[in-house]
Image (tube, rainbow, N blue to C red; front, side, top):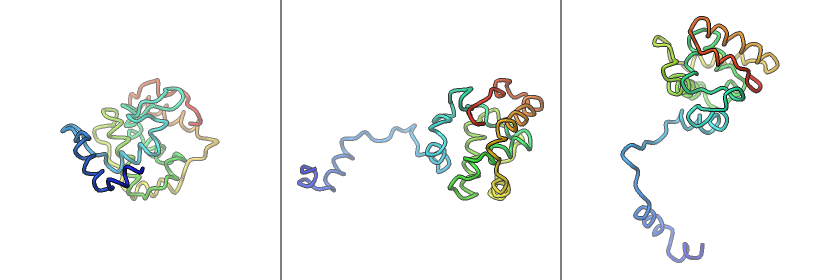
Length: 161
């Protein structure tokens, strides 16, 4: 740190700008929703929504299936870690749209509506109860498999939900 104080902080910033490679053309900044997902969900569900299936449900190319039934649509917002998240209703709606449409990819039904802050507020008012979560998930996923042709592998039990 002595070298830094001798040179000066401003000089170090200039040197860093010259020495460090600049951003590539194909790189971009994360959106607020992507950043929020990484901060609070990515550790378990994976940075790109790919997790240890059977332990933590993967979201990549699957999360969108939850939008094909009313129970499924409500389920993913009413999960305790989601419903009690620190974000405003608008921020959470943005993040859930990223999860369902971004990470979910083609699994999101073509006619699916995006979450609105008002819908998220209503769903958050009725969070799911942890003791009954695993049984309720089984019902929700069973409906998705029948009605939406979600993959049977989504029925695998996972830790806690």
